[in-house]
Amino acid sequence: MARTPNNNAKEGGRGRGRDRDNNKRGPEAREESELLDKLVGINRVAKVVKGGRRFSFAALVVVGDGKGRVGFGNGKAREVPEAIRKATESAKRNMIRVPLREGRTLHHDIRGHFGAGKVLLRAAPAGTGIIAGGPMRAVFETMGVQDVVAKSQGTQNPYNMIKATFEALKNSKSPRAIASKRGMKVGEIVSRRDSGLAAVAAAKE
Image (cartoon, rainbow, N blue to C red; front, side, top):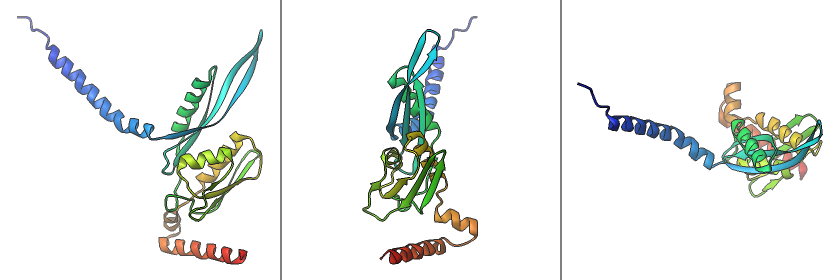
Protein backbone atom coordinates (compact mmCIF):
# COMPACT_ATOMS: atom_id res chain seq x y z
CA MET A 1 0.00 0.00 0.00
CA ALA A 2 1.47 3.28 -1.11
CA ARG A 3 2.04 5.84 1.56
CA THR A 4 0.80 9.32 0.76
CA PRO A 5 3.27 12.11 1.48
CA ASN A 6 2.52 14.25 4.50
CA ASN A 7 2.46 17.71 2.92
CA ASN A 8 1.54 19.34 6.20
CA ALA A 9 4.60 17.88 7.88
CA LYS A 10 6.81 19.16 5.07
CA GLU A 11 5.25 22.56 5.19
CA GLY A 12 5.56 22.59 8.97
CA GLY A 13 9.21 21.63 8.71
CA ARG A 14 9.88 24.40 6.26
CA GLY A 15 7.97 26.83 8.45
CA ARG A 16 9.98 25.89 11.53
CA GLY A 17 13.16 26.32 9.55
CA ARG A 18 12.10 29.76 8.47
CA ASP A 19 11.26 30.65 12.06
CA ARG A 20 14.69 29.55 13.20
CA ASP A 21 16.32 31.59 10.46
CA ASN A 22 14.22 34.63 11.35
CA ASN A 23 15.12 34.28 15.03
CA LYS A 24 18.77 33.99 14.09
CA ARG A 25 18.66 37.03 11.87
CA GLY A 26 16.42 39.05 14.18
CA PRO A 27 19.05 40.50 16.59
CA GLU A 28 21.47 41.12 13.74
CA ALA A 29 18.78 42.89 11.73
CA ARG A 30 17.83 45.05 14.71
CA GLU A 31 21.49 45.87 15.33
CA GLU A 32 22.00 46.95 11.73
CA SER A 33 18.84 49.06 11.82
CA GLU A 34 20.20 50.93 14.86
CA LEU A 35 23.48 51.84 13.17
CA LEU A 36 24.18 55.43 12.14
CA ASP A 37 25.94 56.08 8.87
CA LYS A 38 27.44 59.25 7.43
CA LEU A 39 28.77 59.87 3.94
CA VAL A 40 32.17 61.50 4.33
CA GLY A 41 32.93 62.04 0.67
CA ILE A 42 32.35 60.84 -2.85
CA ASN A 43 34.65 61.25 -5.84
CA ARG A 44 34.33 60.60 -9.53
CA VAL A 45 37.24 58.53 -10.76
CA ALA A 46 38.19 57.65 -14.32
CA LYS A 47 39.85 54.55 -15.72
CA VAL A 48 41.51 54.90 -19.11
CA VAL A 49 40.62 51.97 -21.35
CA LYS A 50 40.83 51.26 -25.01
CA GLY A 51 38.40 53.61 -26.70
CA GLY A 52 38.24 56.28 -24.01
CA ARG A 53 37.74 56.75 -20.29
CA ARG A 54 35.41 54.79 -18.06
CA PHE A 55 33.97 56.80 -15.18
CA SER A 56 32.92 55.44 -11.80
CA PHE A 57 32.30 56.77 -8.29
CA ALA A 58 34.21 56.13 -5.06
CA ALA A 59 32.41 56.66 -1.74
CA LEU A 60 33.77 56.91 1.82
CA VAL A 61 31.28 56.07 4.59
CA VAL A 62 31.51 55.97 8.41
CA VAL A 63 29.16 53.72 10.42
CA GLY A 64 28.62 53.58 14.19
CA ASP A 65 26.11 52.52 16.83
CA GLY A 66 26.40 55.66 18.98
CA LYS A 67 27.71 53.54 21.89
CA GLY A 68 31.43 53.24 21.18
CA ARG A 69 31.46 51.04 18.07
CA VAL A 70 32.51 52.62 14.79
CA GLY A 71 33.88 51.58 11.41
CA PHE A 72 34.68 53.02 8.01
CA GLY A 73 34.69 51.65 4.50
CA ASN A 74 35.01 52.68 0.89
CA GLY A 75 33.29 51.39 -2.21
CA LYS A 76 33.50 51.94 -5.94
CA ALA A 77 30.79 51.44 -8.54
CA ARG A 78 29.44 52.85 -11.78
CA GLU A 79 26.52 54.48 -9.92
CA VAL A 80 26.54 56.60 -6.76
CA PRO A 81 23.94 54.57 -4.75
CA GLU A 82 25.78 51.32 -5.42
CA ALA A 83 29.11 52.87 -4.37
CA ILE A 84 27.54 54.08 -1.11
CA ARG A 85 26.01 50.67 -0.47
CA LYS A 86 29.35 48.92 -0.96
CA ALA A 87 31.10 51.41 1.32
CA THR A 88 28.45 50.96 4.02
CA GLU A 89 28.72 47.16 3.93
CA SER A 90 32.51 47.42 4.15
CA ALA A 91 32.24 49.76 7.15
CA LYS A 92 29.90 47.35 8.97
CA ARG A 93 32.41 44.52 8.53
CA ASN A 94 35.32 46.57 9.91
CA MET A 95 33.85 48.05 13.08
CA ILE A 96 35.95 48.48 16.23
CA ARG A 97 34.94 49.18 19.83
CA VAL A 98 36.41 52.22 21.59
CA PRO A 99 36.11 52.62 25.39
CA LEU A 100 34.44 55.88 26.36
CA ARG A 101 34.67 57.80 29.62
CA GLU A 102 31.21 58.27 31.10
CA GLY A 103 29.86 57.38 27.67
CA ARG A 104 30.66 60.85 26.31
CA THR A 105 34.41 61.38 25.78
CA LEU A 106 37.78 59.62 25.49
CA HIS A 107 39.69 58.36 28.52
CA HIS A 108 42.94 60.09 27.55
CA ASP A 109 44.71 62.08 24.83
CA ILE A 110 45.91 60.03 21.88
CA ARG A 111 47.76 60.60 18.62
CA GLY A 112 47.27 58.82 15.32
CA HIS A 113 49.36 58.64 12.18
CA PHE A 114 48.70 57.16 8.76
CA GLY A 115 50.65 58.16 5.68
CA ALA A 116 50.74 61.96 5.60
CA GLY A 117 47.82 62.18 8.03
CA LYS A 118 48.50 63.09 11.66
CA VAL A 119 45.74 63.69 14.21
CA LEU A 120 45.58 64.61 17.88
CA LEU A 121 42.52 63.59 19.89
CA ARG A 122 41.98 65.08 23.34
CA ALA A 123 39.46 64.25 26.04
CA ALA A 124 37.26 67.20 27.01
CA PRO A 125 35.02 68.15 29.96
CA ALA A 126 31.26 67.98 29.72
CA GLY A 127 29.68 70.70 27.61
CA THR A 128 32.64 71.11 25.26
CA GLY A 129 30.95 69.47 22.30
CA ILE A 130 32.67 68.03 19.24
CA ILE A 131 35.43 70.34 18.07
CA ALA A 132 36.73 68.58 14.97
CA GLY A 133 36.88 68.85 11.19
CA GLY A 134 34.47 67.26 8.76
CA PRO A 135 35.83 63.69 8.37
CA MET A 136 36.75 63.36 12.05
CA ARG A 137 33.44 64.88 13.16
CA ALA A 138 31.60 62.14 11.27
CA VAL A 139 33.58 59.51 13.19
CA PHE A 140 32.80 61.01 16.61
CA GLU A 141 29.12 61.61 15.87
CA THR A 142 28.51 58.02 14.74
CA MET A 143 30.61 56.65 17.62
CA GLY A 144 28.56 58.54 20.22
CA VAL A 145 31.26 60.91 21.52
CA GLN A 146 29.77 64.14 22.88
CA ASP A 147 32.86 66.03 24.09
CA VAL A 148 36.19 65.91 22.27
CA VAL A 149 38.79 68.22 20.79
CA ALA A 150 40.50 66.94 17.63
CA LYS A 151 43.14 68.51 15.44
CA SER A 152 44.45 67.39 12.07
CA GLN A 153 48.16 68.21 11.79
CA GLY A 154 48.90 66.74 8.37
CA THR A 155 47.17 66.23 5.06
CA GLN A 156 43.57 67.23 4.48
CA ASN A 157 42.88 64.11 2.42
CA PRO A 158 39.75 62.60 3.99
CA TYR A 159 40.93 59.01 3.49
CA ASN A 160 44.20 59.60 5.36
CA MET A 161 42.44 61.65 8.04
CA ILE A 162 39.92 58.88 8.69
CA LYS A 163 42.58 56.18 8.76
CA ALA A 164 44.79 58.23 11.10
CA THR A 165 41.81 58.81 13.39
CA PHE A 166 41.12 55.07 13.55
CA GLU A 167 44.77 54.33 14.25
CA ALA A 168 44.50 56.69 17.21
CA LEU A 169 41.22 55.17 18.44
CA LYS A 170 42.74 51.68 18.34
CA ASN A 171 45.31 52.87 20.90
CA SER A 172 42.63 54.12 23.31
CA LYS A 173 42.70 52.19 26.59
CA SER A 174 40.29 52.17 29.50
CA PRO A 175 41.49 52.43 33.14
CA ARG A 176 40.30 48.85 33.70
CA ALA A 177 42.51 47.55 30.88
CA ILE A 178 45.54 49.50 32.15
CA ALA A 179 44.95 48.34 35.72
CA SER A 180 44.75 44.68 34.73
CA LYS A 181 47.93 45.03 32.64
CA ARG A 182 49.92 46.69 35.44
CA GLY A 183 48.45 44.68 38.29
CA MET A 184 46.96 47.76 39.94
CA LYS A 185 43.52 48.82 41.08
CA VAL A 186 41.25 50.88 38.84
CA GLY A 187 40.97 53.57 41.52
CA GLU A 188 44.75 54.10 41.50
CA ILE A 189 44.79 54.60 37.73
CA VAL A 190 41.86 57.01 37.85
CA SER A 191 43.34 59.04 40.73
CA ARG A 192 46.65 59.41 38.90
CA ARG A 193 44.87 60.52 35.75
CA ASP A 194 42.74 63.08 37.61
CA SER A 195 45.74 64.48 39.49
CA GLY A 196 47.64 64.83 36.23
CA LEU A 197 44.75 66.67 34.59
CA ALA A 198 44.48 68.98 37.60
CA ALA A 199 48.20 69.76 37.40
CA VAL A 200 47.94 70.60 33.71
CA ALA A 201 44.94 72.87 34.33
CA ALA A 202 46.80 74.67 37.14
CA ALA A 203 49.85 75.19 34.92
CA LYS A 204 47.69 76.78 32.22
CA GLU A 205 46.21 79.23 34.73
